[in-house]
Image 1 (spheres, one colour):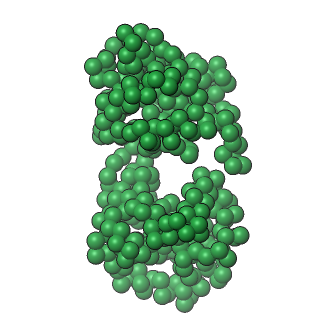
Image 2 (cartoon, one colour; image 1 turned 45 degrees about the horizontal axis):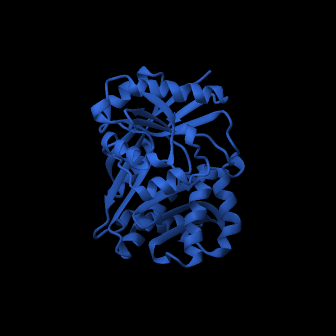
Length: 314
C-alpha cells in the first residue's frame, strides 16, 4: 500500500470510497468539485489517498487556511478534517490508522497544533461524526488520539399548515408595547448597522452566511426563497433571523436581551413566512441541547446527532 497526495485522475475512485464508507453522507461530482477541489484552502497533499494494486482504498480530507477568513485571519495553529473513509472491503487492515498517522505527522510538521473533526468553514459537509450512522468511527478516532469535544444536533420541522400559537402572538404584542420590540423584513437601511452587529455578537462565519443570503436577496435572484428578519428594540438592532429554501438559520439575539423572548418571535415569524410561501419543510445542521428545546416548541424534531472531535498535536 502507498499513501500519496490526491491526483486529478483519482476523482471517481475517491468518490466511490466516499459513498461506500460514508453511507449517510455520500457526495456527487458537483459538490466534490465545488466544495473540495475549488475550495481556496484545498491542497492535494492534504487529501492523501491510500492506493493498493492501483486502486484507491482510502482517503483523508484535511484543510488548513491558505487565505484568511475575513478578519479571523489564517488561524495558523489550526487544521480540520472534514471527511475520511476506507472502503468496507479493506477495513480492519490498519489502513485508516496508517492514513491518520500520515496526515497527523504532516500537519504537525507544518506547525499545526490542533485538528478538529469537522467544524471547518466555509465548506464543511456535516458538523462532525454521526453517532448513530458511524458508531465504529467514534471508537476508531479515540484509538488514534482524538477526544470527543461536544455534540451537535440536527433538526427538522414539517411546516404544513404552520400557524403561530396565540401565546407567541400575545408575546409579540406585549414586547412591542412594553419594550419597543419590532420584527420586520430586512431593508437596505438596516445593512450599515446589521453587518457590524453580526460580526460583534456572532463572528465572521455568521457574517459570511448573512452576506451570502443578502447578496441573493438584494441581487433579486432568489427573493421568494429567502426570509431575512431584523429585530429592533427602541430602534436598536438586537437580533436577526435568516432562511433560504428549506435551510433555516442561523439566527441570534444580542445576549443582553435574550430574556425577552425575542428569539422565539424571530423563529415563529420566519417559519410562518416559509409556510406562507409553500416551503413546507425546514431544517438546520447544528445546534446544542439548550437551543434544541426552543426549536422543539416550534415543531422541530431531531434528525441526526454529531460528535465533534479534537486532537492536540503538541
